Image (cartoon, rainbow, N blue to C red; front, side, top):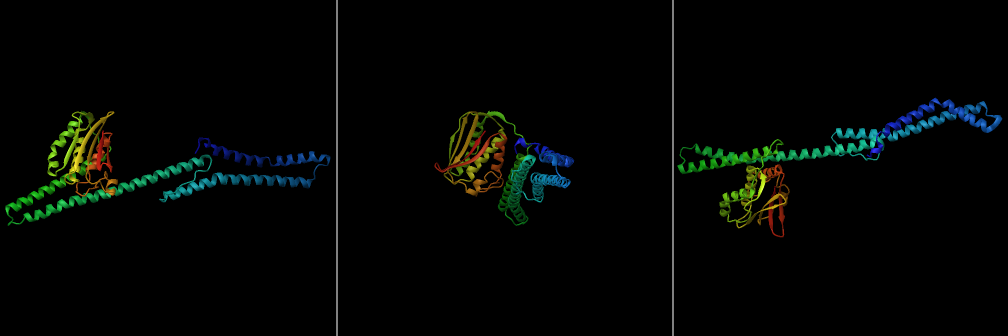
Length: 350
């Protein structure tokens, strides 16, 4: 509501009350004024006593009329808006957050209605966020239970088999290797969950230091190159020898490793994977692109949410953690698709 309506309600009520009091106090004077006016108008004959009584009645009726008008005005501009606001507040307290008031009353009531609408809109938004968080938590807990149950079931099963005395040594070794593999998988899952919880905390801090981010990326790709060869993937690089910026080395390594692992895991053989790095106006952009299949629409809409997995598995937390790391760096992690070039890409900027 506009500022010119500030405090007008109080002044308006004071004026109305003053008018009523003055009319009551000056009832006789009003009557005498009317009589004097008529005496002057009629001349020496004046008015009779009966007519004077009628004038008194008319004056009283006039005051009653004025009082009725004032009562209507007070009801229209004070009582009705106050009741409307009170009824709406009762609805909100009962859980109805779809209540809205039409902001058309004057004085402070207009401001109150506008403030009420803003408050309810804020509560509605908070409710939506809370429900979304609750749904994400349910999915998170379901994902944790599912991903830990599978390796634990296998460990339990093979542990029971190992109790049998007649198992050949080669079978025993195979069972132990499977148990070790499943325990390692469960451990990776737990580490991802701990990292996700850690980065979700507001108190967590990263420690950026100036360094050659191009050398870091080249080193990670060199260490993981055997995985590209195993799957017959074509790797094309456009990375300068030296690009200096401030970043947390260990956390940036986690981001790059996750994106490279995803490119290898979720693409078929003979896919072309391009990794490029460019520097412009103090910002560094790293693109992980490939010509593998595009993501399903549903997966694409929730790609950075926890426990959203592709068809080829994974913890479902890697991209969520990577995005949080980039946000802590003041950068971004985005997913894009280019139908013309038939390439999809993850873009990191820092």
